[in-house]
Length: 550
View 1 (tube, rainbow, N blue to C red):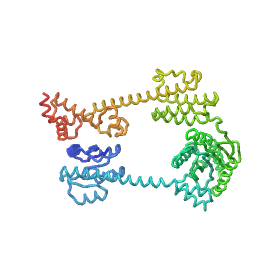
View 2: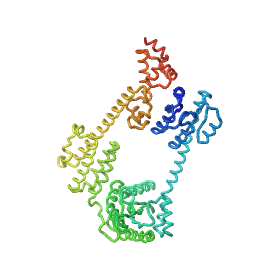
View 3: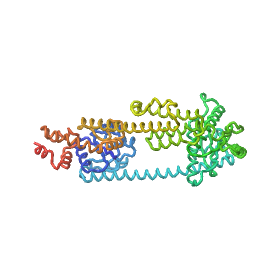
View 4: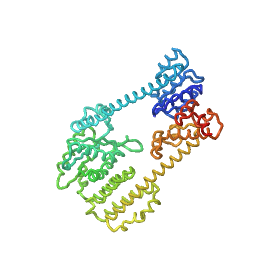
């Protein structure tokens, strides 16, 4: 959508230019008018405008001053000056301040339309240039992880030359860590890759493990991670904020970080196992260390891996302790369900009904639950109950869903004879929730269409631009237009035009109003444009229609 604002202190000029550009039928062009610089600035304060077609010589603030104000707020806006003053000094000053074009009112309609089309071409070319720049920036960003990885891997092998050099390199590479603070090291290894897994699939899974770690740790720590040697990942973490009177000393912050990071290791390991189907071992340093001793700490954690491999499939070790060792299968159901329930909630929010059903079946029929205790199964069941209850409460769906599903059974584990019966109940409940969400969205869409239609009917003589309607209904203009077409089957602009022509026909039939009066009453800027449009739609002029209708 390209928005063009016409500014001239002569109302008939604004009306004539509006009609000219509407008749030119330039795709995706929405035209507005203003009869003073002040009115133009009020419009620009509310709405982004792409092109301003303005007179220069106007009372109060002239066009050149208006141009400066426009570019201060909307730097990418194109200003085209249309003036009756054939003065070189005007043109020179306008172009010096960044005007896109300078044309005379005496140049004629074709030149005005051509100037607008040239300016639209400039906008499109600028968008293309911006796209290329964005692409170059994306390419630079895509190379950054590799540069970070090589730099951080080197820090695990040998200490930095100096703290000052380290700080500069961290900033340059966008690593969110401080060179003046100690760093906590966590290392992990994938024990065994599934068979027939390609190298690209392994890379994606390593990235997924890093994302899981970041999801759990980013709320309480600054961190960076990198994968290397095909099956290893290292995390470097620091307290998320500098110590102050409220947080306490650096030592206290680092001690809190240690407990926070270690406390989240088991959920991360469980998420890797349940979501990615990967067994991942973790070892963690017992404290933050200065950057210069990081290579020694890395070597110590590597030694823990080698010394600790035995009959256990997974490791979860804190340097100097063995209390973190976890036997495979111990409490898996209870530990993993929270993460998988969170994934289910995301699918529910996104409206992915089939994916939700598949994920629910996968969770409840997971082989880890086959040998689970009844207490563990109850834990799984009631965490899923919490998921459904939350959605019922947020959506206000208790009453409508209760008409089809016995919600009293939801919170009663014993009301279902078997584990499979509980799965069937949850699936039916999910189906009802998805159905009600769809009908709710349809209802809201219908209500919006009705409200927009009523507003249009009562404001035919006013501003019914998409931008104005977006302001009235608190929607982005383009989004409102898409929603209207989706639910009504017709473009919003076409609907407005049809309503205006329908009212114009009624006024021509039932009143003695002049064509000029009817033009204003149904919201057209100029009588010539209204007459041309009316004839185009009906094959008759307004006067011919009046005579025919009588």
